[in-house]
Image (cartoon, rainbow, N blue to C red):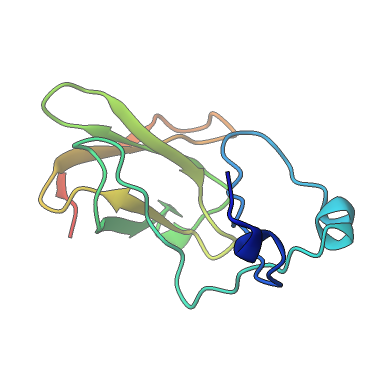
Length: 128
């Protein structure tokens, strides 16, 4: 139980809320509760297992030498073929995967959404 001194104090503590998964926060309700969005200079990374870390894998999807987008791209661990992340290439054809353990050896697979070409695989890609 709080002491009378703490109950009468104007001290207020707000707890930052973090939303995980497919939940979409209602900005109207958050504003009504006077929550202020946190502006980070860089997104933070959550390390939940040995696959996660501060490494990145970047690349570009191309079709007959020209940048090609949107293309579904997946990254897998090489040693056990576990899917780590999926993304879609940006309009300029670039893609990047963050939150991968540095030094982890992977392979990247890009799929042609029009099914005119087979999937393209980049093997022995190391997260830097």
